[in-house]
Image (cartoon, rainbow over all chains, first blue to last red; front, side, top):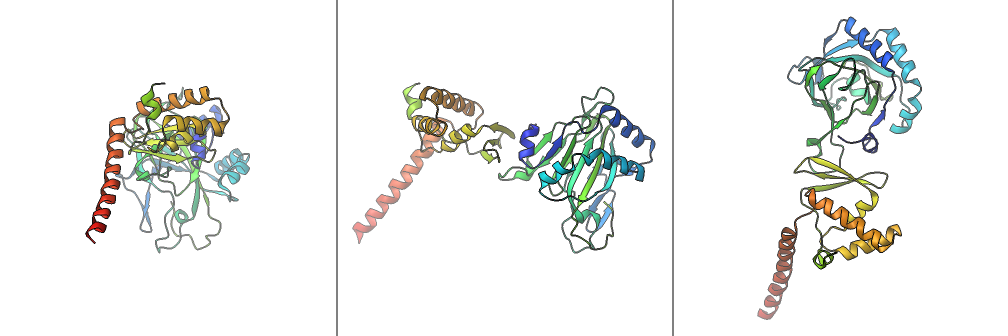
Length: 212
Length: 122
């Protein structure tokens, strides 16, 4: 596990305490109450369920929730723009992810390469933003497993084979370029809650045909 | 400091890779153990000089000059780091380094003598 200072130098952005314990609890309660659907993967122009690649439930945010989230991340937006050296637009496709025992997400990219298919949201993503609503050492809702691993960060042979995990903290935000290979290891016990959203490349104006 | 260490020319292990970081420090990654070790800027200098060409004294001199520290401090730092790198398997062991050095020497000497005998034949 590498320190946050080093991960920052490898291109990751993190803030340890964006949300308070109360705010995290509130988001978790909202997510549990809402009706979720299985997370999907995007391949060859289509988004579909693939339990061998990804197992998680995702809950969309209501417009009010989205507004609240935007307010909560507003203060750190200049730092985000500065870190990624671009003026990031609105945070899009926001959702809450619930990982139950056994759930996981194999190594993947969040952005689809231009594959000749009509441009979708998945093609537009440039930066992924993730907020941990609980952590393995959480006093209320701890979990085991569910490590967020990043691959290909080092300029070494077979770099995509070597993953570095991030130490999750409740309320912590992490942002990274959407073309960074990453994974979530299987949950051994407990439940893992995160909010995820993406900043889109504003220059991609072609019509959106697919969700994420 | 033992004499053999003064004349020893440390060599990086084949499984070890260096990734420089923007602040001048770096990460050493060992493919065998799949472990990354953060190193400071001065450790990075020492690591870069572990090329089988520089002996301990030359490495210490480089640290002394670059960081404007006294000889004793530079020696202690280099000694500690090299011992740590050896312990982590990031340096080729001395026998392996010697073996490769001899192989290179053999190859160079061999190719020179082959060229000489070709000339003589002409």
